[in-house]
Image 1 (cartoon, rainbow, N blue to C red):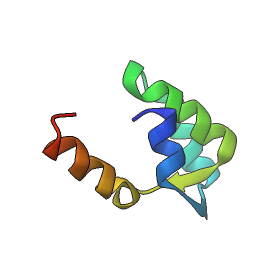
Image 2 (image 1 turned 60 degrees about the horizontal axis):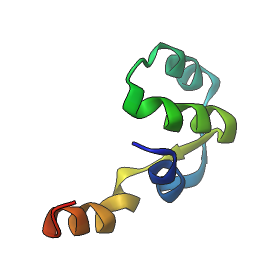
Image 3 (image 1 turned 30 degrees about the horizontal axis):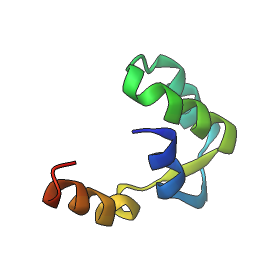
Image 4 (image 1 turned 90 degrees about the vertical axis):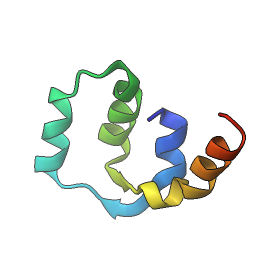
Length: 62
């Protein structure tokens, strides 16, 4: 998930402190950018908000 994906999936729901602490253990290069943004914004992201983009990627070969 890129920072762009996070921004597109972000909601007004605030993420709790305990959940934010868990981000420190993420080591996947593909997720680090989104993790840092989530730590800064402190808002949850929902995959459902990315559904249209995911369908487009599947239909058009990414």
